[in-house]
Image (cartoon, rainbow, N blue to C red; front, top):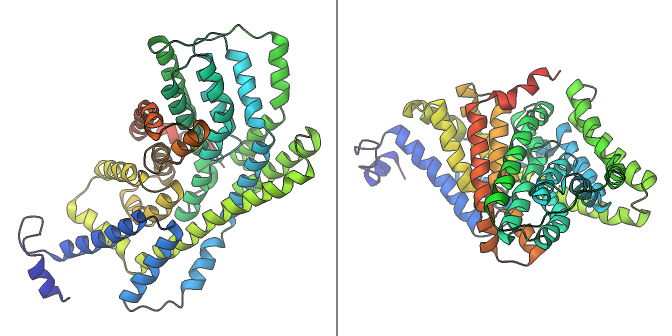
Length: 452
């Protein structure tokens, strides 16, 4: 369709009701492109299929060749940073299969079970501690939920509160380093993964304390709950000895990154190797026959992630070659958006996308588009990455695709509605944490300033 005929068709659709301008045509083209993308995603097709089909379709419609397709896909995965992904996944699989999550819950529960709301607080703290050796939200929710949910229900905690607490506590898995989504964000934006990891520590502690504060509020104003007698010191030290070696991994991994002793990828290798030595050779929690299921789960998870990465990078390359991100930057200039207006728009859009897409897909779809605007406004990519990750935490507990909701539903065989009502207060708490990081950037940027 020619520009003249398009002008007739869209007459009156300009921002002031007049004939559309060149900027309006660019806006409509971008909206149509991503409208189609959303519609195809809503059909239920796998994300990597959708991204690949959209990329090839756009090339064919614009009459461009596909000779670069193999090179782009190979280049998308030929990245040293991405080697950390399967290594951290392997580390999480080893520790999870060795029962470290249950040991952590037993440790925290033993030390603070006599506190008001001790079980609930223990669940939050255990999620935070397991997140520091896992890097996965769903793995954290599943591992801790298996032990924590029956214990809290036994002592009279409200079911909805219990389900919401474990689902929300699991989201700490992608904020407290190591974090799989942060690795992918760093690879896509060429941002230091080490700085992203360090930047997640203070916001992760902040959100953990917010959850703990809500637990204290709930047990004093909500339904009844059981109190337990204090544990003896011998019980406490026995529980501590069981997790001493696994909990030495976070200081080693993060300390090495913080001091510059090794890169995040090297840290992932050290963490995976150390977890093998601890769980197989020292603690003897695992035997050689456990290797096959551990490797199988690692390969399945990594393959899924890498398929999404490859097709999403290809799609991002296609829209970049056709200057879609550049057009968006031009539209931002034409519309005279401020940095704060852009950040508000990003947060609203991510909340919407989180209702329908999983975390990695959102990162790979949106960051090629957001990045030029982030650069234009001079926004620190590390700070933006933490804001982005907090939004992804919200996505993990919002329907209909919030993965943590389905993890809890699988554990308790309950209704999604009941679980969703339990997560509602925690959605508000995460939104508060997002606002605090936006208003006080130093929460995310103070520690990275000391990284070499």
